[in-house]
Length: 99
Image (spheres, rainbow, N blue to C red):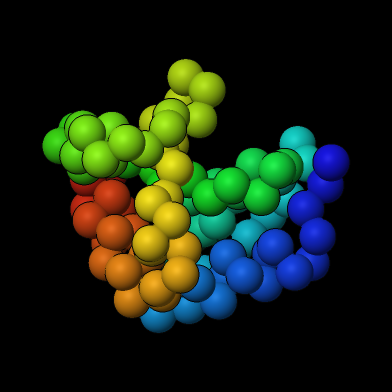
């Protein structure tokens, strides 16, 4: 199942306060990029995941986030999906963990 244009618009709107967010469709889902670096993905089912390592990944896991397969991507809490400010704060934390 491929993502609908509305799913793509939702994700880019959710993270618009981060800066220049772009997308690329892949395998029925898509990757989200901030200034050319992948920071999140959306599965073909429309679930958003943030890329995280170290303490940020541990915190997401402790908060009940589901891991995307065996990759370093963790589901975004429902509350953050309804609050762009919270989603961007969480994304900034996970992006910092990648550096």
